[in-house]
Amino acid sequence: MQDFKSLANQYKTALLQDVIPFWEKYSIDWEQGGYFTCLDRAGQVFDTDKFIWLQNRQVWVFSMLYHQLEQRDNWLKIAAHGANFLAQHGRDAEGNWYFALDRAGNPLVQPYNIFSDCFAAMAFSKYALISGEEWAREVALQAYNNVLRRKDNPKGQYSKAYPGTRSMKSLAVPMILANLSLEMDWLLASDRLDAILDATVQEVMTDFLDPERGLMFENVAPDGSHLNCFDGRLINPGHGIEAMWFIMEIADRRQDTQTIQRAVDVVLNILNFAWDSEYGGLYYFMDAEGQPPQQLEWDQKLWWVHLESLVALAMGYRLTGREDCWDWYQKLHDYAWSRFADPEYGEWFGYLNRRGEVLLHLKGGKWKGCFHVPRALYLCWKQFAAL
Image (cartoon, rainbow, N blue to C red; front, side, top):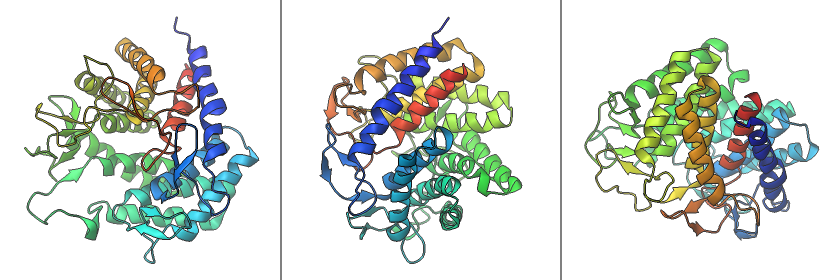
């Protein structure tokens, strides 16, 4: 018999006694608003720029904990601190969310894609839910409608692609829309929500999933066909696996066991494809045909890829009881906890080299903030508590 109780406790303890205290202690910019995310191993700030994805994600994390775990005054205060800063500085005159600000909130990088808007919608939806603030609800809906408006041309005027030569669509857009729409279910009419969820599940599981190989492709032609080029052959294992637990959540809500089983199959196929048989861990990027990937960091081992895999496997096992799911869970658990977690200084490392050695000692930066680690710890805790 698996000891689910001690696993649940391991995740709960790591979340509440290690990871969240790290961000509470080091990341809040009480002087100028928002959060610092560029933190070294010991939590010291090494860059004060503020990246909109990470600012919004941190608002979401503290709002989520307040809503789903415990109504701690400090969590509400931290969420409000970020939300107020972002509402004041985060958007241009048309309501598009910037990519980066300086410490004081002056824009540094244009609103060049819709993911800033996605995370804003997530953050302000959850913050509106816990605060009851009408303005936050309006910010959430405006950001969400922005995402829907821009989803077919996510970079708009900032796209570097020459129009009409090689049209592609990216898995990132429908997968994040699936998760985002579930996050916003309390704000959306049920028929609208169902229509969006139907369309995203259909697109992810039809256009991006290669039925013969059972792999999730990162980019496909508009009709779902494959393109023989760097971008067309790209497999991003972490993205594919994260998309599958989003799909599992939607399917579980609808009691659609067939889609749950298909999603679990895809997770296991990706793991078999992307596991480094020599050094362990999952590759960051791969080429579907085994050609050299264009990303020079392709063989690094990243925190979020392994954490999203733990969530997908824990959820998949809870929903199906499949032994192959459990076997993979144990393998990933042993790898991730022994290499990414930092019991000495707290939180998790983000970047390992192929051999599994720490490559950068940072705990946060331009891409790593208070999001994947706490969300995964919370979700895994809840899966094992339910088991």
